[in-house]
Image (cartoon, rainbow, N blue to C red; front, side):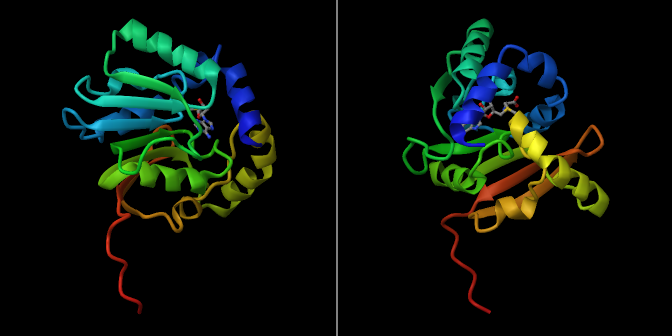
Length: 213
Ligand SMILES: C[S@@+](CC[C@H](N)C(=O)[O-])C[C@H]1O[C@@H](n2cnc3c(N)ncnc32)[C@H](O)[C@@H]1O
């Protein structure tokens, strides 16, 4: 699915997203918030912020920017900002695959349940590393393909259906991280059933390359 189709799908989902995906995705949002370690004044970017279900979990002392391609989802997020009385949040309609921010703008970047939605997820991850400062944190919450062969076969088989619904089911952690300038420091499986992972990464874009073997 291309970016425009994804946008249309999530515009349609916006009305019922919280009821359908609110609870089921909550463990990831809680785990990400617990691991955030945001300091006062930190600049935080949430990629694919959706309806803003994680907004209440960020400390009010940080400067939060949320981006999304779907106007429908952003409208819901704006309502959430208003009802929570948040003054530290900016919402922007922007494609994660080509962000308008300067290099090193953010201290922390969070992407919850979005890497399997973005068509060119590697490009988006490259952008996340670009706009995050060296040594900053990048937290990714997502379903990744299972190591069990049978489960993996099922995930591959249903992927075309999932893609029509707006996400893919067959993304492996290695396929996402290959070539990205990130150091994975923690990979936590989340309830229920360990279906989702929280990848806690340090932005290593300025680290010296390891000497050739
Ligand atoms: C499954 S929802 C996750 C929403 C939210 N993070 C949550 O935890 O509920 C995926 C979101 O990513 C957004 N999205 C998809 N492709 C995007 C892109 N290229 N750039 C920015 N946002 C995108 C969708 O519009 C949707 O709001």
